[in-house]
Image (tube, rainbow, N blue to C red; front, top):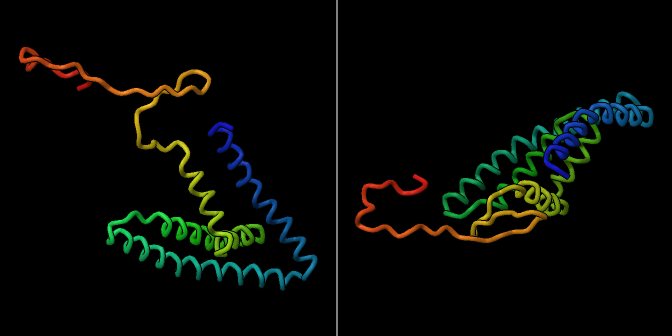
Length: 162
């Protein structure tokens, strides 16, 4: 699936989310009652706001501590981002977003969500190693840059490539 198609699916999912939320809220309201549904939505939103405030501070502290220690704050930042997204999803009124938010918040599900986040974020990132050129049909051709030797007469000539 191309990046353009993935973004199109993501945009369609985001556009459909309010309709899905409305259908679920109405179904829950019919099942447990309107006031109880409203109270449940308010409580989950309040919990989401509290989680956002608390975990936002904790994530910032973990990030600065890792940076002060001179190490890359990978796991701390990834977990913090997942908790922040989970809190944000809880703060948004609706039961579908609440379930998704809980997936990001609950520690047993967080490693799975972190792997998904890292896989998504790692797409299209330039990696260290020898330069490669993609040939036809997915073939990878490795190579290296070789500069010609310069003699004493070449001092005033510009180097190739700058």
